[in-house]
Image (tube, rainbow, N blue to C red; front, side, top):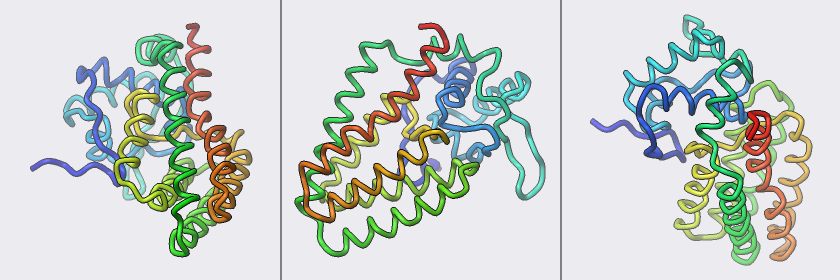
Amino acid sequence: MTSTPPDGFEPVQVGRSVDAVLDRLVTAIAVGDFTPGERLPPERELAVLLGVGRQTLRAALARLRDAGYVATRRGRAGGAFVQEHWGPLSDGAVRRTVAGSAELAALSDARCLLESLIARTAAERRDHQDVEAMRVALAAFVAAARSPADGAAIRRADQEMHRAIIAAAGNAHLARMSRDLLAQLNIGLPIEPYNAALLQLSIEQHTALVAAIEAGDADGAAAVARVHFTITTDAVERAARRAGF
């Protein structure tokens, strides 16, 4: 039986060796996809998310633990918890995993163009139900942001808000394209990095984006989206610079 990906996620097929999976996990932590104190997704979900077998994932997680990046806790609330943002494997893993600067720039440009189109279309097509869904999702995001230590909850709320905006645009192909571009930009993972320092900025941009869409301000919504969706690129580029390339 084929495992079902976590909601909104599809596996991205990349290198399946233990070394490759370890590099991707180390880089995901360096970029901010998973942050210190955060529990990694359950093993089954993480294997599907990475597009790898569970034996390969277990071996990579063991090496991740041995290198001090995660610690395992037992019990109902247990799991693998991130300990270190940057460690002895980070420089090499980031250099091997992150795309070059020219490719990053091209992917970022494509993503900003697409997300601007989605926001513009949502502003032109939204109805009362769409606006209400966006308001509810925005409120959930702001509430999650009040506990900045819970990066996973913030990402879930962020995903729900952008899902509501894509729904308002009324085209399922846009949702697939948005997810795929994020995965290509972010080492094969369709996850938005979380940066506590940028949390307030994200709240302001989300609020402005929803307000513009609700008002039917297509140009305003597109402009906010164009700026907002550089956050992931910035996180990947920061990790690349720290790794020395």
